[in-house]
Length: 172
Image 1 (cartoon, one colour):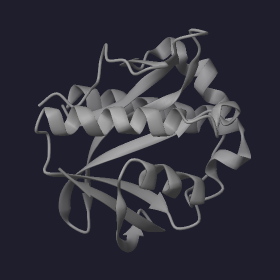
Image 2: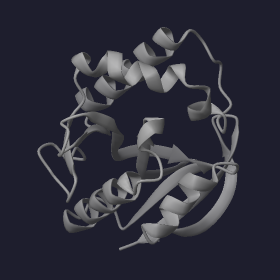
Image 3: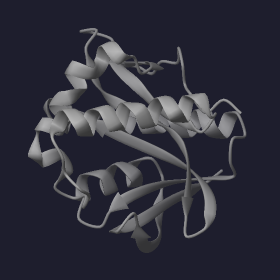
């Protein structure tokens, strides 16, 4: 199945595969402490973290596991963040996740909601899964609000990768 939204677009955003040439722009995400304050993980040098993140996305692409799409703002041509459909395993259950991350200067402008809605609609139109989730730290209220705007509701609270998370879900 094709979980990537390559060459898709919404009102303000273009979706494309991530490129290695995006690295320097996305590195700023890992250099900004606010972007990881809700997530517990072994924080390393931002370049190492960014490299691992890119390697994971390319691994997802190669193994048909979905992956993040680069989000390009149509008006400026800038990379503003990533959003995509990811195959995940949560509590030993195979799920399809809508995941989203934006550079801080693009927060609170409706981009995450717009991108996540586009992913939701793409997944359901293409019958990729009967339901979709978002895995969100219990302390990340802005991301929880995005999930709610996408039509998701809190399904359960669990532990995922050593983090206390809420699983938001929407059914087709």
